[in-house]
Image 1 (cartoon, rainbow, N blue to C red):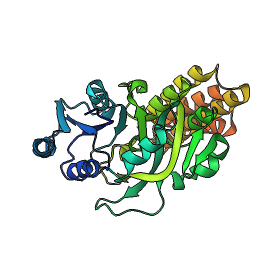
Image 2: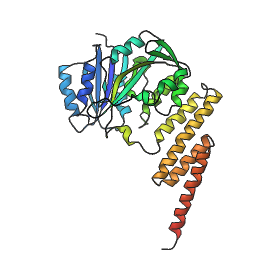
Image 3: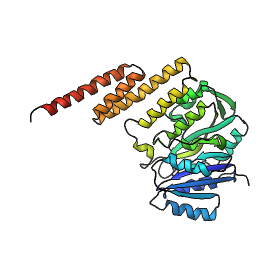
Length: 326
């Protein structure tokens, strides 16, 4: 039987939720799938639960590796052994809607030039109760991306050539990791250097290579919100996110227009300024000063100028206080 879909699932200490995640894959109406669970050094019963389920369903595979602390490493491990025609990703504490595979296959198989399909995702609490407003509704995606989308049928949209620019300058990643469905032959590896934003980095690299994206306007996955989410513990300055945008800026220079490059420089300057403000709140004034200075290097702006002066003032006052005789 030719496998249609490979699901890559990194897992670390998710014994409480992983059974639900795997159940949601087994409930898909398309039976030609495999799920590759990469246990990233769990210390709870995560691997044991997967082992028991794999005995009953040979489509479930378990790979073990020492704890890396980076989902990208686990996902790349899974990608290296995946054999499905299409690949998608699911974190072990999230789950799919029963129509995920069928809806994505219906969209992508009609358009041979489309390399990636994405859809909306709803939030759920620790008990699986759906919370108000989906991920893309909260960011008002349809309204903001309207001029970058071309309607194809009732709930599907092809993303235009400038969608790369839209994704590059969006405040949040438009594509959550559980929302994508990719032709495996196009799925290059995640960066192992990034802790935050490794998924956005991959989408940007694919778009820079002129891959065609398609949006399916349905909620086909559910993101569980709880205290152990990796993204709940991000530092005040998301250094990895800034790095990936700086790299993407230089990658996109021959693709974006002069105006788009100028807007993108302003976006990166804004990221640095936000980081400088956050660092100031925790009294890391020297790091904050450097962040504001980097903001000015990308695009001169009043907020960063004011931030530099304020941070420098705090540094000088601190030095003067230290120099005073006790």
